[in-house]
Image 1 (spheres, rainbow, N blue to C red):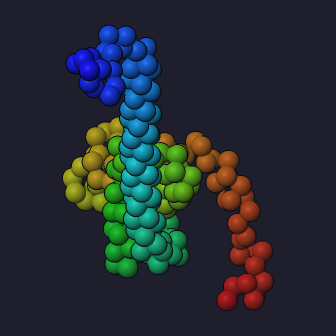
Image 2 (cartoon, helix red, strand yellow):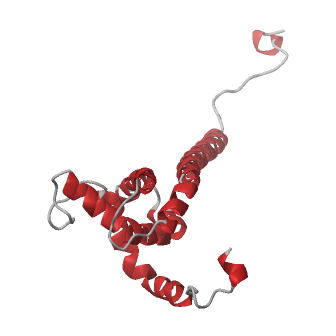
Amino acid sequence: MTAENFWPFIYNFNPFDWSALSAVAALLGLAINIFLLATVYIGYRSIRDGQAAHVSNILIWAAEQMDSIKEDIQVIRNNKDPHNEFSDEYQSSARRVSAIFQRLGYMAHNGLINPIHFKNMWGLSFVLMWQELEPWVKHLREKNGEPKTLSEGAFSRVDFERMALKYEKHFSEIINRMQNTQPTDEDLTDNDKH
């Protein structure tokens, strides 16, 4: 028996199939790329979900702020004085309401609250509250020795005024309809007045 026949198998390494190795490498590369794309997609969704949660948290906070001043808004609406004589109760309510509207206005003006959500949820409220509180805010500014208007350089409640004026034109038709449909004292019956 010769040495060549001694081994039970004869291995021949010369005709190695490089095309098969290339196909395996291509499949492995494809699998890696699919894995990388999947991780990028999952990362994108995580970021998007995190941003949505952040926006949601801000809107919830803003809604809670608005809920906290409902009674103060009623005080302001019920205490209209044509001579701008502001009672202590009115001034306390006006201070709280205008401070919260200032905070929300600042956040909206600087893009911390989505402007579309802000306009849809509170734009009309800003305009109506500004119309109610404008005399008081100007009185406050005068009392503090600052200019009365934005154009003159006022700085108290500036974002509240800025956002109200920004949305005033947008909501003017709605406000006009509201003012035209509000009942007068002559329209109210005795039951309505109580």
